[in-house]
Length: 380
Image (cartoon, rainbow, N blue to C red; front, side, top):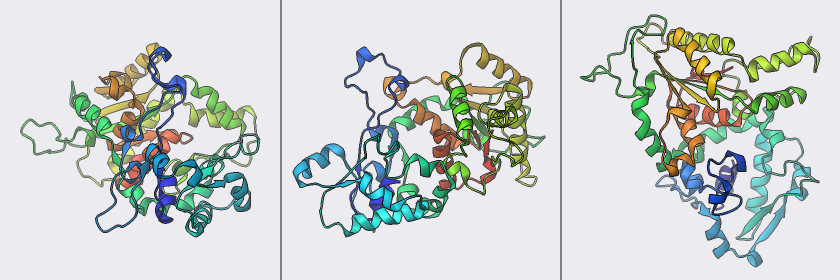
């Protein structure tokens, strides 16, 4: 969204390396070259937000790296804008009003080099230009149409590193074992390939985001704060919205159970949701031959729990099940494994995500930008 702000302001966007939470990195701290470790943005995404070109007739300035910005705009040449001076004047406006307010400031400022300085956490817990209070509310939805039509969205692409990982692991997604369809009795698609296998294996894949481990505590916090779904997961055209009935009182057992069922579902509920989502998607094609026969689990789960889930899914008719842990990645690809999972979910025919997850929301954005039907996006 910052890149889109720069675009409509006719400013050059300055992109930075990406800093994960330290404990998200696979490598031991003794191997880090910098502390904290960082990932080049170009390893995660491609497109105008990462310095790629706009369309041929678009004169908008291309984004540059932070290192280049430091060279052409040294500190003494920068106009500093402080969020603590600007954000209080904007207040709790709609997303589009926040965007337009910042764009006017940037367009009206004569200085060639601008740096936006975030407020101290003691003043503003979330000092970003577009902060968590916006992304975690339906105020963000007014940004959807202009953002999805922006070249920042339309030209967003998968990075070469991520593409290389998917190419190397594509064979895992071709169906194995019994090929009886698990899509409500639909016939197998005629792919036109001599082997009888689909040319694009992801056209028969359902991807599901199964977050476990520390996410249980996160779900409890989300319930305590009466949190809504996150960002684009709130889009009204998507199935499976979440709301707490007015009759259910805050922080009661019934209230907390509603959050638990949708945020941290148990195995039986997941099996049921996967089955229902598969059947609903197939029926949406009005009798056309559609088959979903490979299931991909984007997950941090492991051990006995994951093995038991796979066993239950196999009993429910899924003969080919792939998990994040099955991917074979080199050192470079391992550093962007979350982006790899996201792109696999983007390519799948159907995706089930967690409505409170920014990870899921980014996948939703890519899927809808690609033109997928809303019915292909589901939430626990």
